[in-house]
Length: 283
Image (cartoon, rainbow, N blue to C red; front, side, top):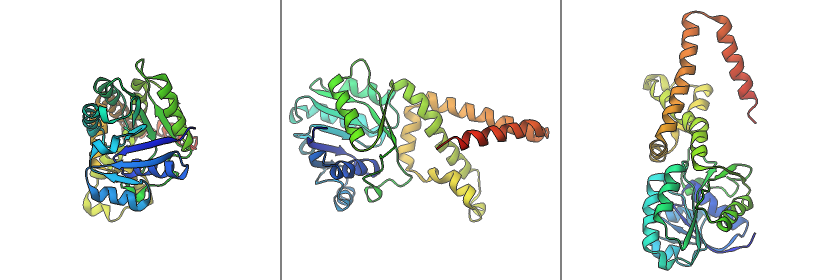
């Protein structure tokens, strides 16, 4: 793909930092600029080699950028979009803006209503990550082989959509295109619900019991160690689907509870075997 002159990443944590490392490893931009709220975080990204330039000043950060990637917690994405809209004279004409938010209906609707027509917004969600969330843990191959969702609408600029898809493919990701609504329904079930369950499971166990946990508990609850602010934003920006997923899980758990109470060996075995087959099918 054609090299970008300047890519600006707003929010250089695990995802933003990994994007920067991937860009630099594959030489997809002449300059990678990191924008943040704390210089301490930006210094970690500089030390890691994820960015070439660091700044707390959004205006200088977006000036001359071909591609702006907002990789902050979801609640901050519209705030940065508003600031970019005010500073749009400093951005290149037809600058592409994308994001890395884990929910899309909320973000896409907000940003399409905020950003000026001189910029082109394409919603995206890299389906990769870790419970560790700083640039110190970033890696150039975080997205290699992972899925990245792009969520265009009727308002999306087609050429910019193609460029964003090509960008993610260039850093090793498999691009999946779907509407924002469908995306949010999907990730609520396969991404958001596991975190809710992990958090609930950890909170259901007393501190005295925690010191005795072994591999099963550790493996099941690993993601509960993720950033609380990020997950708060995810749940509250996709409440309808989050609640639907909770309801679905409750029904499944209630069925197991009834089988144990009634000592229904046949039903219990069928449920456990079905779960085993589904889990074994996951690559």
